Structures are given as C-alpha cells and as structure tokens.
Length: 105
Image (cartoon, rainbow, N blue to C red; front, side):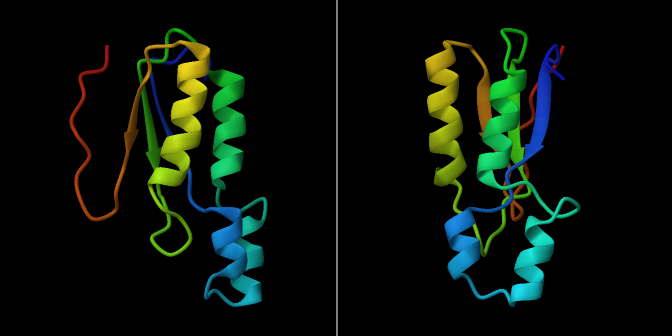
C-alpha cells in the first residue's frame, strides 16, 4: 500500500468513546476484535507505516456515529501528515453525505 496514490482507510471508533458508550460488552468486544473494526489509533498506526510522497489522497471512512467524532482522527492524522511534510490531501467520509469527487491518476 505504500506506493498508492489514494487510499481509503477505516477509522471507525475512538477507544475512550467505545469504552464509555452505550454498546453492551459483547458488542464492544466484537468491535475491538481482530475481525471487528479499526480504531482511530489502529488507522493512525497503519498510516504511519505506509505514508509516502506518492500518497495524494487519504480518505478516512466508516467513522462510527456513536463511538467517534470526525475531528478526532482528522486532528491526529492531520498532524502526522504535517509532521511528515507530505502533500497528501485528507478527506473524511461521512455516512450521511457523499464524499467529494477526486481525480486520481
């Protein structure tokens, strides 16, 4: 993935929000499992591993409306992109609206 021009990465939940949120324990365990969802921290770790100059667009997708807020991954990933001094455009994908169309070459 490190040579891609565009990536869509799930950034589903914030650990603290999931812990204190309304989901029953069995569902919290399923969300966190190896077959569940990627947390904001998981997504950030992956992004740090694969980030390259070639990455023009990074879409963060499948954000939980219950256990996440768009600004949480946007701030952490945005800071990582600025620190790396790459020109990657960060886009947050919302469940309730279409994502901006981008030309990917």
